[in-house]
Image (tube, rainbow, N blue to C red; front, top):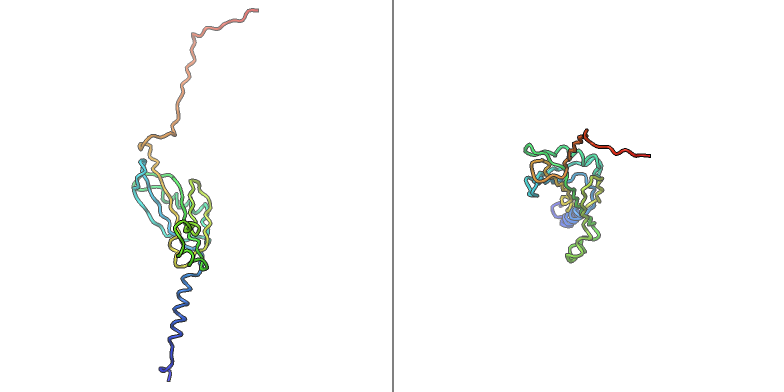
Length: 174
């Protein structure tokens, strides 16, 4: 008797439910961080990828970014300094997925949040739909800080002062 029951409707509901789960907004708790090491000639030497667990969902603090930079400022015995930080956040929610799919290339940028900075600041991320969760990322550009590469503008000029003892003085007469 149980074998005669039609359970296809249950399977259809489960399938729709699983599809809706992919479109639910979820907080960003882990994010992919790509660290690009560049030479003095701006050639990419290496790309390192880290899956980073955030201390607070949707928020990367300035201290976390500094820690990541300090932990990754050397590669093959060369030291690197921060060049710039980019972060990419997909801000599509389940209400506008259809308009995103049907939109022209000019309107796609309104669904994406892309920003660049050469300063270290807190990064606030918006929740993203589950299916596009992995696209959210941070890219850190590290540039070579070796002094033997290229010209460096950070040089100190030494000035030597030698007082001369043969200097003639003019006397004022009154």
